[in-house]
Amino acid sequence: ILILYMFACIGLELISKDLNMRSNPKLEQLIEVQFSNLFNTMVTLLQFVTLDSISSIYFPLVREYPLLMFYFLPVILIVSIALMNMVTAVLVEGALTQANNDRDARKRFLTERIKEQLPIYTQLFRSLDKDGNGSITVRELQALTINDVPQVFKKTLQSFRFESMAELFEILDGNISGDIDEDEFIDGLLNLNVAEFQHVPPELIMTLKLSRSNSRRSRNIMKHLMGIHNELQRLMPKQDLQSASGDLPGL
Image (cartoon, rainbow, N blue to C red; front, side, top):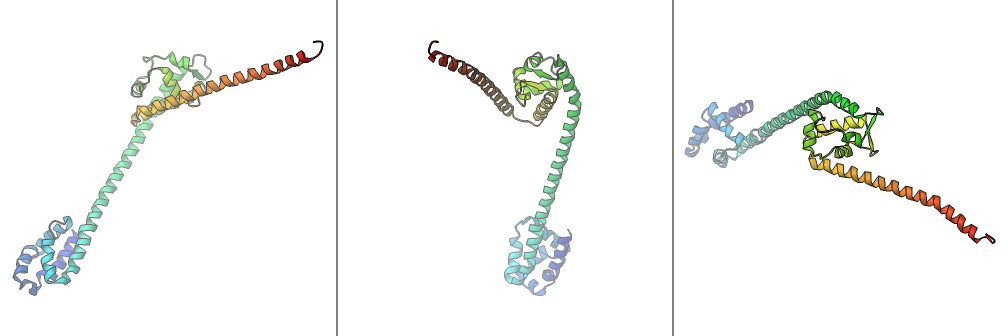
C-alpha cells in the first residue's frame, strides 16, 4: 500500500496537474477517469499489480509524452514484478515453515510410538527365547502365532504381506547368521513399524526378503562346497599313500 501511495502521489504531480496533457481531449478523458484524484490513481495502479489491461492506461499517455515511460516503467518493475515476487516468496516461506513443522511433528509422533512399542517387543522376544541364550532361531519364531503377535504389529504384518514367520525371520536376520539376538529383533520390528507408517512400498520389503533368502542359500551352498573340499583333501593323502605302497616291490 505504501508503494502504491508513493507512486500515486508522483502520478498526480506528473499527470493530473499537467495542464498540457489535460488540453488534449483524448487524454483528458483518460486522466479524469484514471488519475483524477489520489484514490482513483491508487485504484489504477492496482491494475499494474495484476497486469490487468494496463496497456490501455499507459500507452496513450506514453505515445503523446514519451518521458512518462520513466514513470510507468518503474511502476511495472516494482509494483508488478517485485511485489508479486515478494508475495510469492512469502507464500513459499510459509509452505516451507509448515513442512518443517509437519516434519517435526512426525518425528515427535514416531519417537512416542517407539517409546510405546519398545517394552512390548522386548517382552515378546524374552517370551520366545525359551532357552534364555539371548537369541532366537527360525523354529522359535515359527512357534509364534498370529494371535500372539502384539496388536500394534498385526497391521504391519498385513501391510507387508508376510505369509509366515519364516519370511519375517528373513527380514529380521540382518547379518544372515541363522539366529536373531534381542537388538536385531527389536530394531527390526521397530523399523518395519516405522516403515509401514511412512508408507514404504511392500514390494521393497519383498525385495529385501528375497535378497536375504538368496544370500542365506548362497552361504549354505558355500558351506557344503567347503565341506566337500575338506573331505576331498582328507581323502587324497590316503589315496596317494595307497598308490605309493602298491608300487613298492614285494608289497
